[in-house]
Length: 376
Image (cartoon, rainbow, N blue to C red):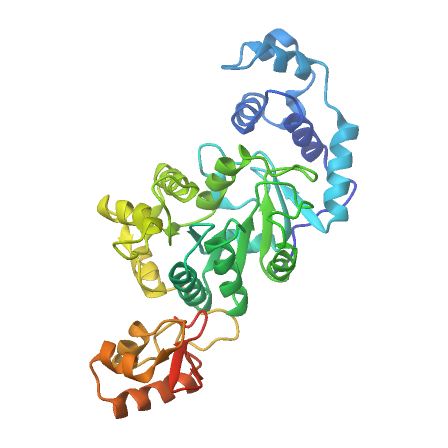
């Protein structure tokens, strides 16, 4: 994976687009209309105020600022700061801009990033969920994200605490790619304590945002961030979500963008899974494993580099899958596993040994066994 070429002298088109983004009252949709109307960002500047105001929904204040011309010095400082961070900037029409993201109705006018821009253009699946995730939610996220990563799928999420960070970590530990979408500048560590995970993601995947360096993580930024998460992805998997949550906003945006929406079921007494159950009632695909996601997409993606051709659970026998389906990340006693699988102890012990040798299961003191993180 390589980074997008990004070094001075910066192109006039890039600096013109950054300058557009600095104009008060000019958002992504307005920039899109202006560029479509005049052919390029460089051609937007140098027009009369009246010509700008004739463009649909163009405010007079914004038109007045546009008529004054671009602040190329400020634009250059942003580009230089991004480069100093080891980052890059792309925009719709740039050859490295992710094709799926560019096809949505309101693509980010600028995409700032660190790491591999190619990761954001791979076979991406978004995984989102609660910040205050339960142990069940985190375990489910890790298993599914790990399985998708081993199958060569890029896991996209929002770097938040809980489900998001669990997905990113599982993808990294599985040796796969992951893309984190931030609601602040590349140089702003949010949430607290996320810097170490960001650096691990950047090593092979990418961290991206639509906001320039120095931008604080304001609440209004996160719905916009969510539409990037779904916009980059072929499907969105909601792991754990309440009825009023950002994850359901992401699911709605995904549907508007023509993406598949899937959900992981939870316990019937779990308030944190009510949003997932509502999605399932509305027709979302039910997800219990990475295989369910791949089947929903109707694709057989290549394995991640360095893996053999038997990705995910393809190398497990039917009897091994029965045991894997009943295991949790938290260690369980052999008796509990036998009861759940309805198999005799001798057979379960033999299967657990095979699963441990294949790297799916860890053994613990007291005749207890647990499914490894990303083990499915």
